[in-house]
Amino acid sequence: MSALNNKIDFAVILSVTNANPNGDPLNGNRPRINYDGHGEISDVCIKRKIRNRLMDMGEPVFVQSDDRRNDGYKSLQDRAKGCEAVQKAAKDKDAYAKAACEAWTDVRSFGQVFAFKGEDVSVGVRGPVSVHPAISIDPVDLVSIQITKSVNSVTESKKSSDTMGMKHRVPFGLYVFYGSINCQLAEKTGFSREDADKIKEALRTLFENDASSARPDGSMEVCKLYWWEHGCKCGQHSSAKVHHSLHVQKKEGVDIPHSFADYVVTLDPLADLEPEICDGI
Image 1 (cartoon, one colour):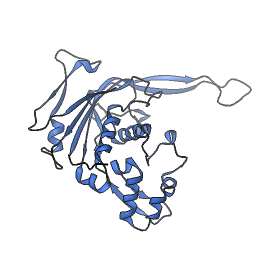
Image 2 (spheres, one colour):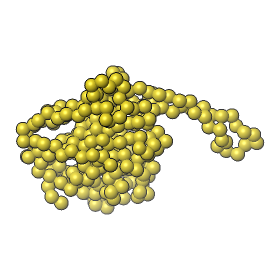
Image 3 (spheres, one colour):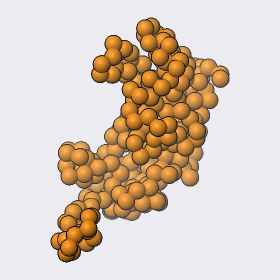
Image 4 (cartoon, helix red, strand yellow):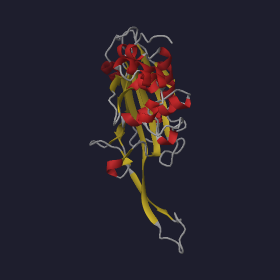
């Protein structure tokens, strides 16, 4: 695999239509919003989706969710113990980190802390790929509906009473999140140019194979992916300047937006740096 010698910044514009993009367990699983009323999708949620897409591509992933587990291991500790190369390096922290990075794509991408109960091993890996939370351009509305379950969960002599519940959704919201890939950290974890291409494809297809009751197929869509590849390891511009060069605003005369078409996207010119712009699938 070839070394990554160019800093990368990226931005993703995504739309949410009648879906719950990221429920807040501390707020009855309602879609996350900040104090200004803008919708929010946590960076942890976004990384989970990237990991799922990497797994769909056949990549080895360390942090697997229970519903997507593909190797039979029931915990991170079991998965680490099941990797022979990692266990051979258990007494050397640098060797342990190197073996873990070689074994799992998400470890060399996002980093990982290896610290398990009952073991002396405590190893931290700092990954080159950083992802911001996604924030909606405008405040979002939250719609809640009452639902009922009218079927017995277990066999009973008589029909059980209906069980009441709630479902929550965002009618429409346009969200943006940013991220970067650091070359210096990529050198330490062995993150390659090929790995960067896989992250790029995962971002472009972020919601493929991600449907659920809260997020029906088609309700979550990547509208645009902006991919800035700098000409050197440190980059011609800071990540903050690159991210701030992207502007997303409602079109003039639009009061309540209902689609990506109700927004206009502009880019400030940056010296010697042009993004590759990709449509989602």
